[in-house]
Image (cartoon, rainbow, N blue to C red; front, side, top):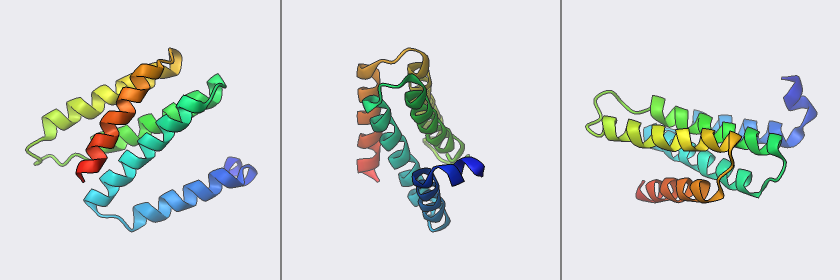
Length: 118
């Protein structure tokens, strides 16, 4: 909690994110996680500081993990979705250690395409 108190921008983003979660249904939560992942990847692509870039990619990875965890067990597309989101998450997390702008751009496009379908 102290970290949030020291950085007002982070605190405001967190409060906004929490409020959006509170007011969302299944599709809304999926949209929220996709938007968060896309935003963090976009931010990471513009950051030159390795630590800050890694933090943004870590947040994107967390949003993708939430998507993975949120796929309903009875969803007929469960296996392909788990594979898709898991593969994208692996690429995002790999980019923490070895940044790859082309890979991140493709992940961002893939997530944007999925978001457009909702």
